[in-house]
Length: 361
Length: 277
Image (cartoon, rainbow over all chains, first blue to last red; front, top):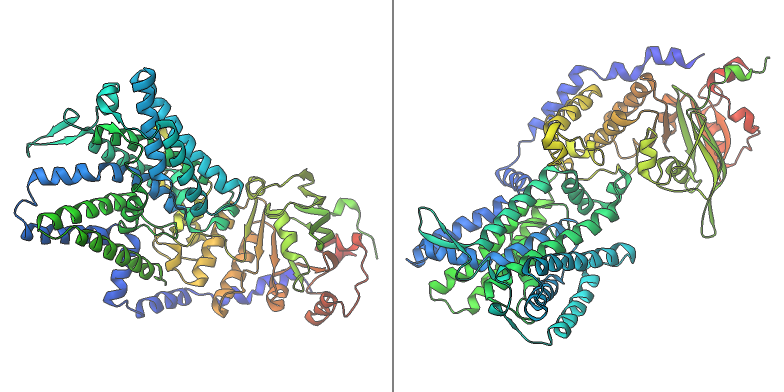
């Protein structure tokens, strides 16, 4: 007897009829999701919806608590206050999407700002050149993080905890722990924020800094890259399941190194914004940005476990933090309640993420 | 009884000669051979730890053998990464499926070989053809009779176990130009879903693409395999067919209860030449 005969009779195919398939569909229909499950699925699909809801609620609540809150001037102030952290958080987002974390963001940013300023103020390097050196240096710092993580197979937490101290120490050494004033530098270094670095927003008659516009442009570019390019899809895949990603032929280590390097470039741009914003390059300002960026990313709905989240969520997260601080202060609360509120938001955001992750068929 | 002449024996689509792989002092492969002929389903069975997984990982590029050669259509190849293997037309459905749960079906199907939009959008702005890939994914899924999944932008983790398996199989079927390897494709499935996957294996074979099926499930192997490669202690000890041996006999060879007395030339024969012999 031959295999051919078996194949002709084919008991399997006979079993699989159209009715079978239809039965399977109706089986799915029968279990109608509850309202809660439906919310869970929607949030699963659109991770920025949760933070957006919080933002709108805060907007409404604070507008009742303070008349000044909704004024265009105040809104512009909030945007200005979140510009540096918001920019740095873009780099932090792509790193967290790969299931990594970067604790050295503040140290890199401050280090780069000091290098740019020192080259210009002390060595007379033209402003553009100082900027380009700064961008390259930031990229190199990120690259170093990425190489340590992939070559030595160390957890990102440990590597960046180490480079946080290393970069910060070197930054103190290079700057001799002194602040460089903005007016000693080439004007281009301070051109993006501060008194002259602003643009009038039409209709509402309020100035916002070029740096804030720059931040929004980087958000738009990164949103496009993450959604519409192969590199962006590979970032999500790497964070979601690195082994599966490797088995599809993607070079996971190369993705990781490139992500840390690009994050370093973004930090360097953030350093430029920072110099404009404070009108100086100080070796001490900005170290607290580490936790601030992580807070923005987490409140923005990106999962610390990698593979889920959108960069626009981070923008919303950064604005939520800025708005909470601003609104509570306008409403007359003691500043300690700002930190309290942000702490609650972080815990709520992570709890929500855990719940959303449990979505299944 | 005539001995088949070399003319009757087709060139194997995939061939392994003397593969050796050691993990420290553990010998996973000890001179393993394998032949896969065009248009056949080759079952691979063996006890736990016999080296089946290591063997197929050598083909999928996930493991690099210490010694031995792999030939595709008679040509020596070096598979140093999953990418090399895929470029040679070998697709693998891993037991773990190797799909990213948080990503949607379309993205998973094309992961690592995304299509870009034509023109300046694709070349300068590197824009992916998301809708085109989704459409192609839908077509592939419906070709395989997995139409119950409607929405290709749905995350894989929202699918049932069988549907996820379907996505992994669809990916292999869509890109497998030469060989498809399936590692325990029915292990996690219910009866109905297992039937579907077995049918898929037959469909793929009928499209002319040979399949290697690794499974512990003897009835499934005996149902779809044309030949069955029995692996024991890191090497091939016998190749049987569902016609020549019963399941009990195959299991006896697999566990070493019955010593197999087959020469390597005998084991390398395709099913057609065996029937003639």
